[in-house]
Image 1 (spheres, rainbow, N blue to C red):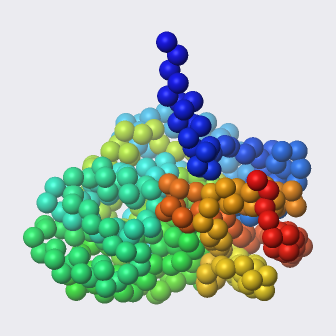
Image 2: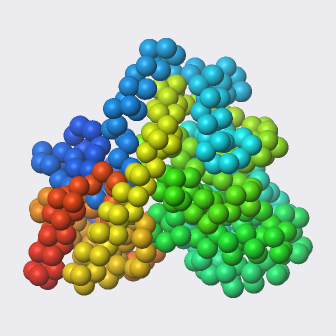
Image 3: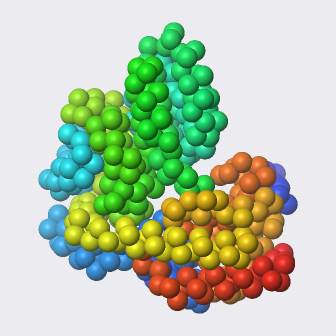
Length: 391
């Protein structure tokens, strides 16, 4: 008997405008890419500093492969702990201003490993309602009680903390730069509440690392809160153009996670080539902090252009710009219209974002040229004048 479940479920997603298909990029990632046989401006990448195809990262990866081979062979606690992993961890700890850092294979694995290790039965996790799915899943995997507070609402957060005295430990977890909305967590207020109510703070700085702060060190540098946040997660796969993630914090924290984080213990470690490209990216960021300035300049330029076209984008200066359209069908129609004009922006629909908030997630890069940005703005202008999108 033929099982029609998968087909029926797929058809339902199509009818709701929420069916997803992969688009193929031919060649390297850059400010423009070849997609479906044509070159389009890429406005839908987390490669914020344009390092994913940087010659120095390529060379570092090749050299490491020649020196160390293609794989690490095992998990870190078996035989996969290689000198290049430890070198990268030392550099990351210095970059983030902490005693130690610990590599994970992705931001998702870092969060689903660290959060259940940090909070368990009898503890309380307080999570922003717009936190990334990896934080949500990390909370679900823990045995802790989870309370979700309204997005960046500090009164709501404090209200929960006031009623939390029965819990052994309180852990506040939040994104730093929210990946779908482009706004920044009010970290000084969160830290103040954590100190007032004896809570721990964990920041997911995945989209803030290499983006926020004068030299790209993230939200801690952005607000000048050195030493105030005990647990920092960051990724190497976005602004740093490589792959993997890390937790940065105290010596005691890292020693504890080595023994408790299941996604570290039971996973083969990152390939040496990936570690080498991450080291090269950190070096470039140290040498060229002007990349951060260029990213901000491009972000402000594009935001100004969109506002002049009367598009309802939120106030801000980060490279993540949501254009909320509401309806999934309208959203994907606009994706197709933009593609026809030589611009690729991905549509984001439920369940990634709440119902009724389907959007275009526009992301800028430091390496976007003014010509690319102007071409993109002209595409948005044409669509605005036409007043309709492809169905």
